[in-house]
Image 1 (cartoon, rainbow, N blue to C red):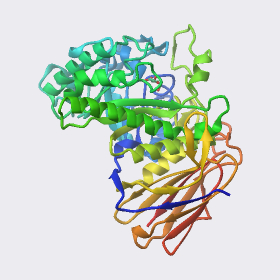
Image 2 (cartoon, rainbow, N blue to C red):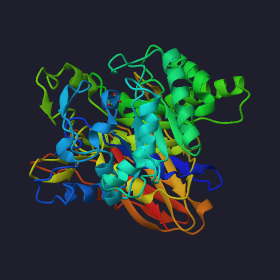
Image 3 (tube, rainbow, N blue to C red):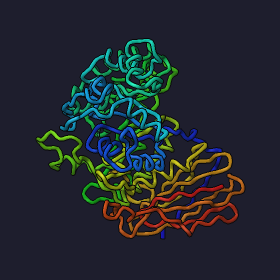
Image 4 (cartoon, rainbow, N blue to C red):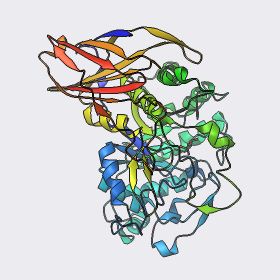
Length: 499
Ligand code: AHR
């Protein structure tokens, strides 16, 4: 049985836990909005048409900041279509996902939904196929209190209070040839700089996210970040990172170590941003907005017939059904985001409902939790105070994609009167025996220890069997004389709460 020893030193603080690390993403894509969060005919719908069974699950998930309305969708979006009387809103073609957009949910409705879920809005503007003025118009509509044409329009549309959106994305994946209106780094850097400068003329407190590469595998990765920031450094606050992981050719060992890639990705983007900052003799540091991350069986999606020639409203798209192994990877990626809280200012699990999502719904039917729901919700609930870098002594194994990987990964958070330790065991076959030296925390006791694992690492939750996979109490957890011991099953994610 592999053994590992972890030492927690409460002085080894990385950064405060940032609530925005637990963000998510709602895109007008597939059934994320329509029959996902919004379904007026559903028995649980409220007066706005929002499914309250989904609201309850989103609250339980503990997601914080929600990116909206895209994604690739935003690059063909006219925000004006989605406000005002619903019966007058146009139906448009969405080229990004080859579907029809009814505009029945727009900014004002979505802001009301965010209140129900106690979440913050992260709003994306279309810089791909529109200009600076529509971005400024949206800002005026969303944030200006009243007394101007567009703020008064919002008031007339039934929203007297401004939405006060703080964090804004300047487009989406602008390097991707699949993006409507994609650009070169030179062109986008200039557009982003001008749009950001204009938005900050309206409100210098805004927090602005410039697009980084749409993935570290892009041929222009690195150069893209450098060029874009050379143009926009002074005007923006964060640069985006997007990463999706999946099992390739059945190589579960590499997949389980995906967090190594995410960590390296963050390092590279931070180094590039700092390089530009040093060249500009700037004392300002650019943060990372990891505003799309998840497991996504993208290769299978690209090879599938999901997107065909028909123009349909809310088709079933990207409805990945997640396994136990996927949940372990999601839990581990979230641990990495926590560990990089020194530079990762915000992150968004992509996405929230139905579309590569922790929550699934059936039209007219139930809503349920995917396997990936659990590590996210439990981490969001338990992580508090400061992130602590644990010292991990564990065996390693060879992976084809990420080199030598530790069998065990861990992170901890420490608050005044509580602490939490998050762990993964990446071993495919063996349980691992872990000891954690928690003496630096003072006297402590275990108040909760839960593990997500299954004899079948490919087990899933489905409409027919929505509770097939749930986390279970880990009864092996014991704390004696400042040393916590616990057994972690193979391919598992675990959280331990201490008081
Ligand atoms: O999250 C799904 C899609 O992935 C987003 O629309 C896009 O930004 C990314 O390519």
